[in-house]
Image 1 (cartoon, rainbow, N blue to C red):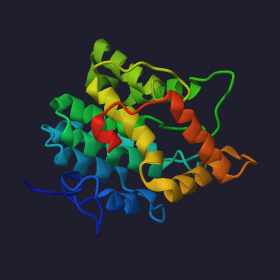
Image 2: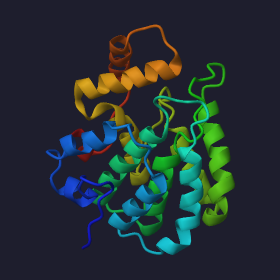
Image 3: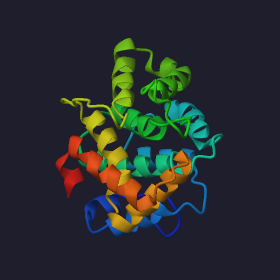
Amino acid sequence: MKHYIFEKNFPSLNYIKIRWPASKNILAKYIMSNCRKPDLYRLSIICLKELNFRNLKKVRKDLKKVSEECSKNINFNTYHNEHHFKAVLVIACVLGKIYSLKNFDKFLLVILALAHDMNHQGRRILSNPYYQEKKTLKNLNQIIFRKISNYKKWKRIEKIIMNTYFQGKAEVKDDILEKIILDSDLLSSLMFGFENGLELAKRLKFELKLEISSLVLFKKFLESLICKKLHLDYSKI
């Protein structure tokens, strides 16, 4: 099977999967780097090829639209930006290579990993806790609903996006796609050790314009995980 590197000097997703968890350090270098804006469209194509997705030609246009929308950062977010989308996408696709997915779910995996925080406002509207997720769904619906063209499939997408709300207490059942997306979103801030976690907390602190230290913010994040859980055994390694 052909392997596709997602950036110069970095190996393929298959290489990372085979050597997991030792390959976490390699992945961390790519995830934590924000000196170069990622090409989300190219990365999406590579991920689908690594997942052996069929009918790639049919989804290129939709992928391009979603990637372009996710590459925008009109609020100058320092955390919820294209680098966060890059992180969740790559982690989700590593997990997607391990757990058996249907062909259509491979497409959804890439779309949802990219778009789960699309057009993020930076700060939350406290009086409307699901505002961000609803906004994301509205924008995503305009791009891909014709490709879905199925109400039941769209309700599944809606459920997964709504459950990415960090303060929510969603119960994940048997949907492997949902488990991968939710785990990847958490792992993007959690899996690369304390120092990298602190750096991500620093980025979030600036985005939220908080007065507290990055250390305090990161500790609060870790404390909040008591009410959360990782859903896949492979995520816990």
